[in-house]
Length: 322
Image (cartoon, rainbow, N blue to C red; front, top):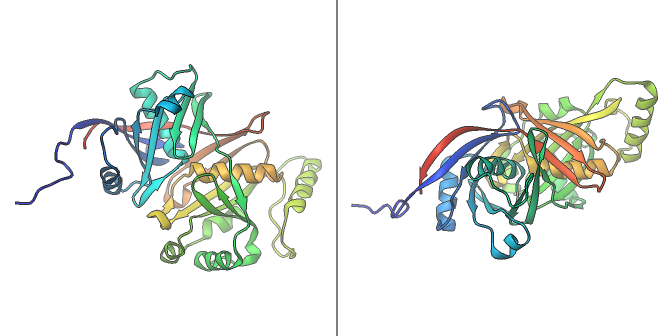
């Protein structure tokens, strides 16, 4: 008779499955939330995250004494099917949504402070939505050999790439600004090669609205100031930038394509707002390639802090045996 060590001494723990970056169930990015992760080992957490087969599974724990003294309401550990993350956006929003429904008593009214691998992350109510303060992003130029290999895996030509940056706010994303939303949506990546490269990749393209010609001229000047290509064969659409179309590929951590990605959108916002490509308020769309409809609401406040907001909806609530 075999011994099941995983379930030895298992107890019932409160559990929710939340859909994030959507107000309509099953249209966003699902998240598994274990609301009491106390006493679970790293192996148990990882095994359960692998079993849920969702892009992320989180475990809520009491804040450390040091973090609690700085206002932290809880500690969050975030796992993909293949490993632990120091930070991720949709788990931050979804876990806070679940924690508020389960506990509902932050230290400071109207604000929740989460402790995680990157430190303390503040969340606030943004109308009917939660929004998190984007952690600081570190930017660098990708190595030419890596960029060339990633473009080959994506089936993209260099002329379709307006700019490329390595963006790191805990997770690191090789982020490519492409020439049109149609180019973003047409990409059919070789996930096996991306996994071998070990690099998460984010794609984005600016969406424009038709407005007054004077505003269009201003937008074009900003685009030209930011542009890095010498060719003019495939200039981006013109108008005033109003949002982004986004896709995220993370085969390196066991997620071929992520439906809606908070950490990537946070990094993209800090990069593209700083460069004058996007305004201080815009909406990003992600998930259409997977039959989802995720909406990410970006705001940069007067202190230059970027906030990443989104709706969340609880789809499953109950207990799980761990």
